[in-house]
Length: 144
Image 1 (cartoon, one colour):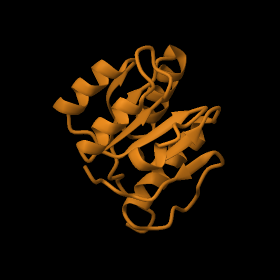
Image 2 (tube, rainbow, N blue to C red):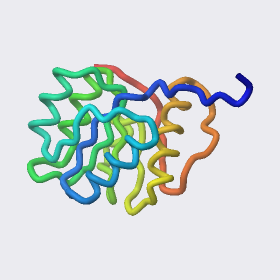
Image 3 (cartoon, helix red, strand yellow):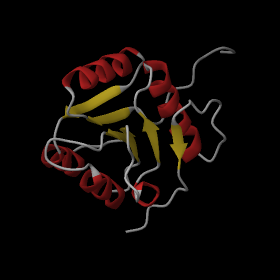
């Protein structure tokens, strides 16, 4: 079909966010736009358990969680070869080494979706159609 929308490759998302309203809004918005939310987690310990147990295509992770700075989640994701996008007001200094990118808060929901789409294109070796304001993509590397 000529105008058929392509099915996203990054379909199964994990949201790691300790602000309940932000977490709920992101989950609801992304679900209504065709993504499957594996889990919405508010702490790193639970996130690490989900990373070890579930098939995940992309992790959206805040930095200032109740029990950590989010870096442990990013490091575990990198070791599991799961791309992680920090979604935070302040990215860690080593974010380029442990994440695929960073979306700066505050953002609007359409920029969150556009960021997921940009990460998908970027990981697939294509130039993203639109890079939202506030999104920084880092060189891709999944070393140990």
